[in-house]
Amino acid sequence: NAGVTQTPKFRILKIGQSMTLQCAQDMNHNYMYWYRQDPGMGLKLIYYSVGAGITDKGEVPNGYNVSRSTTEDFPLRLELAAPSQTSVYFCASSYDSNYEQYFGPGTRLTVT
Amino acid sequence: QQQVKQSPQSLIVQKGGISIINCAYENTAFDYFPWYQQFPGKGPALLIAIRPDVSEKKEGRFTISFNKSAKQFSLHIMDSQPGDSATYFCAATPNSGNTPLVFGKGTRLSVIA
Image 1 (tube, rainbow over the protein chains, first blue to last red):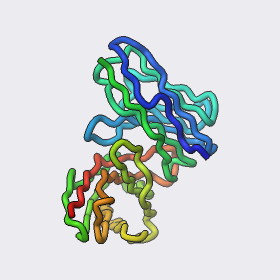
Image 2 (tube, rainbow over the protein chains, first blue to last red):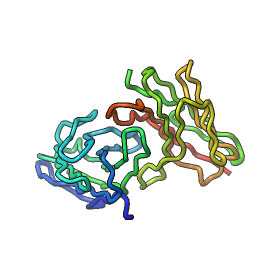
Image 3 (cartoon, one colour):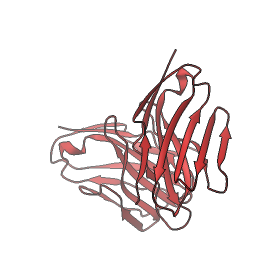
Image 4 (cartoon, chains in turn yellow, green):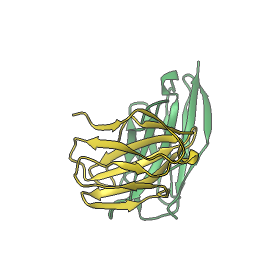
């Protein structure tokens, strides 16, 4: 099992550009999550999904969009990138909401 | 009521000492309490978790103590080692429903020789 994979590992965006962060898991988990982690700070939930076709907002959803067309994939879309979106983005998955979350290696995004 | 309050923010412990990190919550529906460990440049990984049917769970040098009446739980790292230097996050969620984990803000632990 590859677990949770994320691409790209690093990305530099200019203000106003858009991009999609990819996340995939091969554990057949129903739940998937996107977090952001600013330097020296904790995890903030952006969006989560409890199954294909179902998504819900987390703590900090503004400026982001997600989709969940398959169980395996959960891409995060940034529209009109802003410097405030400079962060490390982690994708995670779990069998259920009260089971272990498996995290990906992260995507380090810089918006300048 | 959805918050999990974690303390201290940072902790320095001598090698061989005991590291103690505390978390408190308000939501009485919470009944799954995991701790995650994160090394620099890596994603968090589950370290140990407890459900409230027990007051303590031990895995090697790591122990969770759980006090349901006080709505508090803590992580104890015995014989702390430099390799334990990492950021630790507590979290909580109800056992039912689709509520994602609520994470504490994290504790940066440094174990010095």
